[in-house]
Length: 170
Image (cartoon, rainbow, N blue to C red; front, side, top):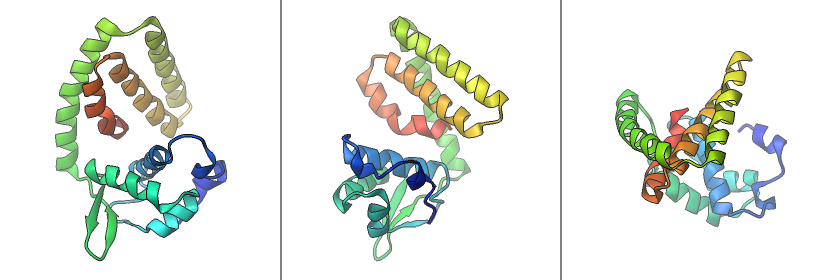
């Protein structure tokens, strides 16, 4: 198992944010980036130790990831990273197309000046990263840009619906 993230920071347990949320974001990022590929078995004990958290917030995060389709649970095998095929991607983008259109329309009417400046900043950062060939940064700025549009919509229900989809825009 790779430890590249562990090298960048101490443990997730050292922060003062919600552990469940931090663990959820970390696991989701690892799945999206392919560090945990489809079919990979997640061993709670190993991941909890690596992240420096107890198994309780890890289980809660894994339950949320399962509800969003990132993980599947199989008897006697535990939690596995779900596969994401061409059909799945097509269905995802069908839904995202409609929801993002709604979010953009609402954001066009409701975005604050600060939100608009932040969107411009994210586009600039993304352009610079693309020109420098830093694909990972482009993906991150793209996800942040889409998240900003959803937040600027001012619609909490839409924000909840889009939450698991924004990271998949990568």
